[in-house]
Amino acid sequence: MTQSARSTADGAVASANLLFHLHARPCPVCGNTNDAHELYPQHLDPARIDGMSYASRKEPEYMSLRMVVCPECELLYAPQIPSADFLTRAYADTGYDSDSEARQAAASYAQALAGRMDLLPDRTAALEVGAGNGALLFHLRALGFTQVIGIEPSRDAALSAAPDLRELIRVESFDAARLPKAHFSLIIANQTLEHIDEPYRFLSAARTLLKPGGAVMIVSHNYRHWLMRLLGARSPIIDIEHLQVFSPASLSYALQRAGFAAPNIGPFANCYPLHYWIRLVPIPRALKRPLHAWLRNSAGGGIGGMMLRASVGNMLAWAHAPIL
Ligand SMILES: [Zn+2]
Image (cartoon, rainbow, N blue to C red; front, side, top):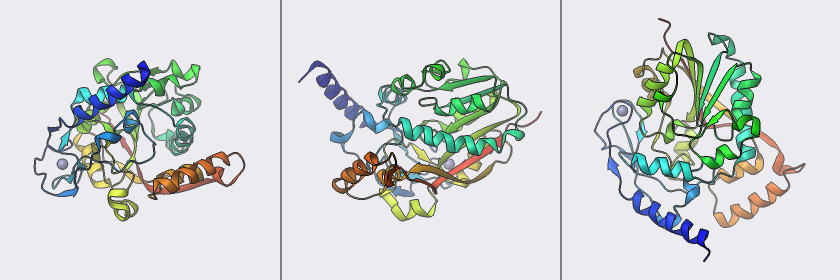
């Protein structure tokens, strides 16, 4: 075994041990402590926890923390989660292999954003939390924002950014104290809210960073979507990396509790090539791997590269900070 292979193996064992030292928390949106309504039992396999468990847009693993529905705000959340230290390290060390998918997701986000630009007070400053390889930062600059900042905890993700986008990304976890108050016209957190251990605190902090009338844009999974209900525990949203999953009602509750005006929340359609969609389908790995490889190899001009737009359980929330 090489030195690096051994340290990777040691790291995986350490991750598995840490993961089993979970600590209890109340509902991370409203503080309710009644966790009796279990929707998914805990399902963890330490042998399969590796660096990729904490990367976004990966092949689903069907591992999950215990998930319950809050009787007060309807949030689906894990009442026992790993420590903040563990999560910070897991995301810093996470692998990254989804460059082209990130660019395709960013194009869908940018399209949704373009139709809402007139709702913003101005185009001075935009912040993206969970910026990945900076794919959306590229579009924010093109939309005319004079200052664009991305926050991304994964070193690998930030390192895969194009050089001119890399300089816009701060490789760190989100910390509102390190950002100017009442400064941004737009804050974006796409496919990020599920991974934050204190989502209410995050939204409250984000509101203080917005100038009056500034907006937050959030794309997240909707666990109440019919497809997620149909797939149940084999849905891609039920995964070890998700500390909570919102519904339209719980996301609206969280935003308003954090001081935003009544949000606009609707379904969000992604556009991806066929080979990417196949990765998310709950079929056996022995079948999926060769099928995905074949479609991916044909992606250039073949059937695997065919672009499909579909709303598969994502929603977009748009909410404004109050005008004082
Ligand atoms: Zn709650």
